[in-house]
Length: 139
Image (cartoon, rainbow, N blue to C red; front, side, top):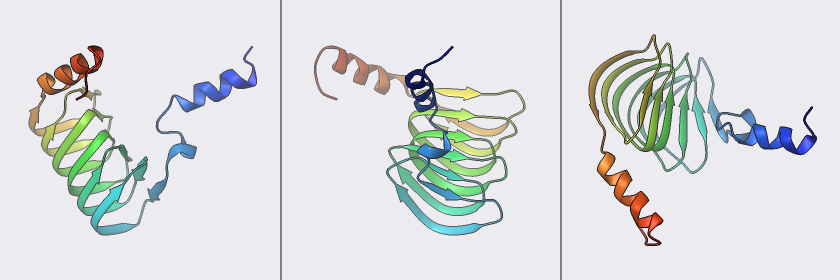
């Protein structure tokens, strides 16, 4: 049905594929401090501090995060308390529990997510950037 090339192409589309994750904090582990990264990172343990990246942060169901997060994309399934600024999007997946502020141009929330806080969606910035690229200009 599929040849090898099609299977490889289908795998590359998923940003949470294990081969794409460059760092992993597993369940039962604890970390406190400042995390800075350039590629996809997954957290399933406890983390306290700051996270900064232009790429994707994946927070698994067993994670307990208290942090200020600035990333490109956040995919959250665990417990989170703090502030999030995401340049591209935030995905809240069940059974996520969120207590804090979220600032992002795109937000998706699954049924079963608990969300207590403030959401700011700044569509004007992402739209003006898209128009500049469309017109051949630079952001």
